[in-house]
Length: 487
Image (cartoon, rainbow, N blue to C red; front, side, top):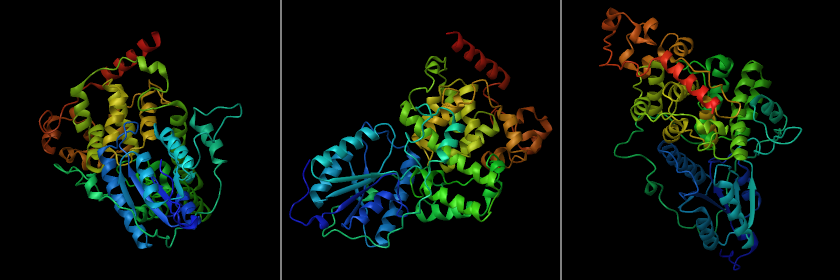
């Protein structure tokens, strides 16, 4: 590892801010530390595709492309630049230290598999080379080992975890957004964002994405939610046919808005009575679920590969390529499942309630390994978060922490009738069923022939028949569970 240049005063030796999933200027501890040092600041983003780091999914690459462009514009507006480099983080940081003579490197900590080991090795090498290193909690409310039981150890059940975690979140003021950053004497070379090929081509499957990645839009979306949908969040968040959720998940995942900013904004909304306390508490609990999955991941290993409950690694999952493909394409014959999978493909996002329904269908109706579903969501979700995605799939499968019991098998028909009673969500995402009445839209195969004909629906032609019978699939799933328990 090269050492910082000794031909410049310490105060002029730059600070490198390594942006990761904290793509914002406001309330960013790593950026604040670099600016507070009085040194020139070199903002850096590294596209690290090392084998130890899980490759980004296609939808994540799409978001990252737009978010980096937004961050670069924000930095330029305050007289700075975003330096883009591709390669192993250790090699990139080493080269940039040599080029700039940097005396300080700052970043906000991440805990995905492979990150702590890589970052720890990098920190040790930088320190040994005489570079000061400053790391911070800027991506989560709490470090994953911060919440401990009285007897020691981490929580495996969400409710007591969140009860304890809420008391540990410090009510500290937001770190200011810098109005300018001191520039280095010479800017290092920067790769062109377009050369990274993050935006899909041949074909461009993102043409329907209606997102606006970036810090400004994340802030606007939070404000809009707090003044509107928050008022009835607890009920409306389960209704995919209405705008009842915050849609902040991708902005939060990429750090365009930080969890502490969300926390403060929610409490300010509570103080001015913008929504009932129980609605705000439910919203904050969803932020807490993200923290819960993080501490499970950090303490129990890679949840995308290994079941939290090791007994489920013996589960008799089926290989069913045709069933998997039908599920991925939204052609299962169950309208609520198909609408969700088509929304996912069209927007890179799916309503939370429908995520549960579609995941349950794959694992329990088709008996396909939850890892297959987790991998598909990882590739197609703009908010694909390692801990949350894997943790939620294991929750549905029954193999995770504080999991839904295996015998809780969502009926996609009754779930649709309960949460999308008028069928508005299905009409939008499965338009071939749009003319069916609400009484038939959740189970078109039960509709009289004249009703199907009037709606222009031909089962098996314009819309598929169910690929599996619910009652038979449920019985098969319960039998599989019995075999697991008997093993």
